Each structure stands twice: as C-alpha cells, then as structure tokens.
Length: 611
Image 1: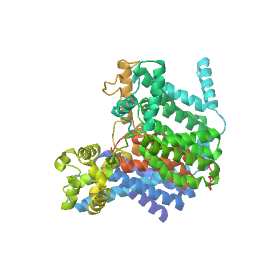
Image 2: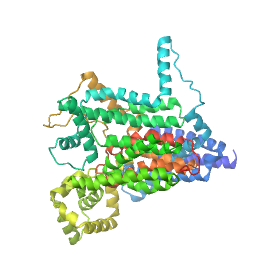
Image 3: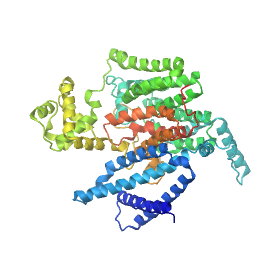
Image 4: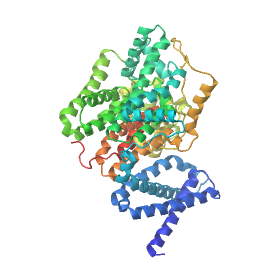
C-alpha cells in the first residue's frame, strides 16, 4: 500500500470511528450495541466510495466545493447539537469528560455532513448527469404495457393528456385527491382563530388585523356569495373553503406549468404532482380556514413568477407577480416585513428589466401601504397589540427571571410596572410564549408601550449579562424550525371548534372506515422512515440551505434571488414566533419544497441572469 493511500485509509478509519460515536449518541445507544459496529462499517465504506468518486471527478475536490461544504456542515452540526447535545452528557458530571464527548460527537457529525455534502455536490454539479435526470433524453418513453389492452390504452391516454396539459391535470388531480377531506371536514376545519375571523365576517366583533384583514375580507366575500345561493350558513362558508382548495391547487399547478416551461421531464412533474395531491397535510390544510394556507400558495406563485421573468414579462406572468406579491404583504403580518426585506435585492436584480418590474414592485408596495395604513385607519381596524410582536424578547427576559438571576432594583421595578411576577414561574413555558403575552395583557401593557426605550435597554443589558440564558430561551422558542428531529403533530385539527354562531361540523361522508383512513394517513408521517422527512420543518430548512449552497457550487449565484422570499419570511418567523413547533407558520416553505429542488438543478446562464 502506497504511503498516500495508507494515510487516507487510516484517516477513513478515524473518520468512521468519530462518525459511529456521533450516531451512537444521537441514537441513545450504549457503546456495546452491535449497531455501533454497523455504523462504523457503513461509514468506512461510504467514505471510501466518496474518496474514489472525488478522485475520478476533480471538481468535487475544488476549493469552492470544499469551502461551501465546510460552511454548511458546520452549520448543520451546530444546529443539530444545539438541541441534542444535552443528552450526550446527561450522565456525566466531570467537565473534562463532557468536553471530550461533545468534541468527539461534533467531529463525527461534522465529518459525516461534510462527506455527504461533497458526495451530493459531486452529483448536482455534474450538469450532464443532472440534465439527463431533469430533462431526460427528450423522448417520452414511459408508457404502460399491461395484460389488459383496454386498461393500457386508457392509462397511456391519461399519460398523453398529462404531458400535453400538465398544469391543468395537476390542478384537477389535486382537487380530486383532496375532495374526500373536503367532504369529511365539511364545511371546512375551523379552529378558534377561524371562528374569530368568522365573528368579524358576521359583524359580531370589530374588524381586527390580528388575523389579517385582507384574508378576513376574502372569507367574507365568498361567504356572502354563498348566501346568494343558499340561506344555510354551513353551505355558505363551504364556498370559501372550496375556493381556498382551488387556489392552493392553482399554486401547485402553476409551479408544474412553470417547470414544464423550463422543459422538466413529464415523469418528474407527475411525481411532484403526487407530492401535492397525496401527502395528507396538503389535503388537510386545503380545507383548513387559516391565513397560512393561501399565504403558502402566494409565496410559491410569487417565486414562480420571478422565475418566469427569465422567459419574458408576459402579461399573465406580471399579473400573477403583482397579485401574489400583494397577498404576500397582506395575508400574514410577517409577509409585509419579508417583502420589505427582499425589495432592495429585487430592485437590484431586476435593474435591467426596470421598465417592467419596477412599476410592478412599486404597485405591490404602494397597494400594501395604502391598505395597511390609511384604509385600515379610516375603517378603525384594530391592529395587533405591541406584545404580539415581542414573543422572543419576552421569553428571554422571563427566562432570566425564572432562573433567579440577579436584577437591580430599578430593573425589577420596571418589569413590575407591567406584570405581576407572583406566578411567572408557574406560567412560563419555554416553548410557548402566549402565557407570558397574556400575563402582560393582564397587567399594564400601556406602560410598556409608553416606555419602549427603557425596556429595550433592559433587554440589551440583561442579554449582555446573561447571554447563555438568552441563547437557551431562544433555542427553546425556535428549535422546531431548524432542528430536524423534533416531534409535533401536523394537520391533526378537524371539525369546527365549539361555537354558537350556527356553523358546525357537518360531514358529507363518514363512518369508521373514513375516520380510520384519515387517522392512519396522518400518523404515517411520524412512523415511516424517509417519508417522515416530508413532515419535518427542520429538514425542509436544511434542504433550502443545501439548495442555496448548490448555487455556489454550480456557479449560479443569481439563483439565490429565487430563494430570497422564503429566506426572508423564515427569518421573520425566527424573530417573532410565539410557538417553537408550529408547522403552519412555515407551511410556505414546505409547499415550495419542490420549487427549491427543481430550481437548484435548472440550467441557467452562469453570469447575470437578470438581463
């Protein structure tokens, strides 16, 4: 064995040793578990294979690949260990042993992620192979050849229709697959948030922008359209639910048609259609009356229209761009901030299409500003209170207090002017900010509003004095959005929350078989390996990070602009989320997941694609 080969062999053994150690700790296994040996062997042969592939493909070992992989693997390792590390040293009291364990696990995860990223980038940067995967050979060779000729002809005819009308077919496939959920959950799933908006629609309570007024008015519009055909309140509200289903299906179909414009092969388009049509949370959310659902479709439409601008600013594309942009600004509070954050980058990127894109961006911005401020003020729309946007700092200050940290008399007096601290330890929940927000609302929120600068200084001073408390509180408040192994129920809501408004759950289909099928379809997301990844917000975020890194690997940095809306919105969630694991807050990312992956592999000019 040559010296270089021998050194690499020994290095692979060491890498495999640390990787197996990390996986052992992550799996909560004892060192004597036979699976630790399995992990070692799998890691060793995987790393040997990666070495061989890198040796055959020089570009996989290029500086940009290594640098990007190093950065992303460090980020992935830190994100994973930020939550999981406490389990690795829970039985140890010696700080030296704790440090050795944590360092060893860090090395193991870092090597694992680095090697896997190198391997994946070696494929995604191979544009010839990716061209074959994404576009095929130009021949639509996938056909059915079954024993029953008539059935084969029917299926092949359906395939031919899908190839010709991919967008329209995707739209109707989604609606068809979601229809049983609509019939079972008729007239739609209405949680307390939905009931609050419906009370506004009925004029029982004043209009409030706590749940975006624009979304409430859309519900009101289609509810009253429903009343034109029936006096039944249940039937009338179902009009909105069905329109929401159609809008979500249109978002999926628009993306399918966009991908088809870029010549993505029909088989991949069909697989993506099945993701939208068959993954149960898409169906459940399609009939759930939440602002987050049309917002998710709007984000995907906005991203797709940005991509379509590469092919020219057709009137339909500009119309979708403007309408989805306005919805992005108005259908969630954080959507407005996300758009404002994106705006300078969009202006720069589309500077060579200024005559077409700048008026559209100006129209989106001005429409949102006029509706959010003059119109809402004139209509006396109640705005969300101050504490609603302060979930993270509120939790951080509460953590400091609950940890019995020392505060000056002046600091303590400032806090007690707003809240009664008697029951703060009983009410504080590290992953749920609503308890603290309600405590502030029950106290003197007006004092907080009148002394914003003093509380800002308090927050900064406590953060500088107790940074670990702040970091721990922030981790507990946000981990569900970036840690890929947190469990939370997704799409479990059903029926109509208790209300005396006259609307109730009125299923059009039912029975034990329907109920059990729905229950199993939801539970499979927490049971089946691989498939369960689609149910993890953290995994989707990691995929988005990978796709962004891939833009650097392929020397297509301009692609980052297509991920920017999602990144900006994601950042706003991390800044202000009241709940650590709320799937619907980042459903826009999950719904756009196929967009990220397809865009990552599309062939685009490496230079300025804003021309």
